[in-house]
Length: 588
Image (cartoon, rainbow, N blue to C red):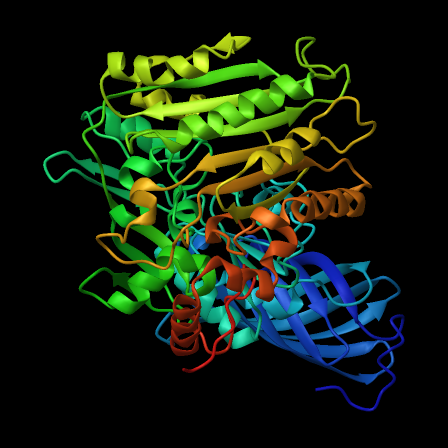
């Protein structure tokens, strides 16, 4: 370790980040070294990482020793012990060292006593990756640190209003990588954040070990069993296509771009929810890496409490790396959109009120929603939408086409400007909602609502009244619940509508620099609808400050929340998984 020598003087000591070359045994290796004030040293090369210590006996002279470990990407294993005596020449250091090469089981196989090295000071201070460098040693995939090529891309996502600044990103190649990253984070005292496709990120992962599971792309369909096994990197569009080849279908949501695992662990609200219930009902088993670094398979018969908790508890209990789900023999549906002009508030109120009355009398085979939209008058939009307001009804019917057309007829009688309702292959179900495929700057909020009366209709319609100046311009969707969604599932889980009639989902555009104003506007919308708010929420729709603990509690019944918190205390007592809509651990 360091002597009492004044190491803070960077001209006199090697403190800082160095890049250079080592020559030994007719070969040349490039390296990056980070020397810290505390006397520690960290190494990175294209094929290895290392840690060690350094000391200075007099100004301009120092020595260091480190253990270099080959990463899986090197193609072989083993370790190297290096000792170097060096001196400074301004912003350059030169040294001579001894290199000892050992096999993975510790057998010395080679020694070099005259290795020569030289480095250039790249920056002052220690590297961002200094304390985390050994993370790369067991990882088959990629380990990235701030400033590395691909780092920003790896931790970016669909929702641009949330920015991640993790300490390191592990682009996992397999479940073993995930387990190694979790174990490392636990030893380093850093939280774990996980992202599969980035569609549902809600909490900044600052300082975390960020595990990207997008490369876990296992996908197989068993048509005889009617099941699919799905890796954490898959999106629903891919599963739809694979299942359709066998006349089968998964219970997906409104977007084929959404990642499977985030959707399932949030419960999964399918477009056919009134008919079949939550997608979590159809999960047979999950493979999950828990806070102790173990890979577990959980199911109704294997650790059933954890199986219950993960379906609804999101990432509070570990990193889900794969799932087995049931598929349904669905080939076709009847569905589509009906657009109604919303500029005339009286007509808009008539359409909305008529929809609410219509929805109340529909069979469980009919799932539907109504969306109120107000578009700004900007050139980026198609001419037919600029400055206009709409009431938009979407339907999905599971049954006979002729019966579906009869059920939809009252909506057609209201005179839609556009009507796309028709029979279609199930694989096109995610096209009904036309969710954005590219990343968006949007503020998201949600709530569960009671039945809506005439006063609620007037309040909602006022939000898209074009005579009201300014913005932001909300998009408010009301998804009709009930039916199978309100019945106990066959495989119990932690998700419930808590008896609500509608799910409210609000998208508020958030231009750069206007985040606070957008959040305030969203709060005002929810406050205006407070009379019809049940006070509950769905765990798959917790974003922005709905991720705060007091809001998270609203996503569960009190009994379920206490059970989840007790299981959190059992499986993650140290809150390793807290970069999420967090459920703090406590014992009953």
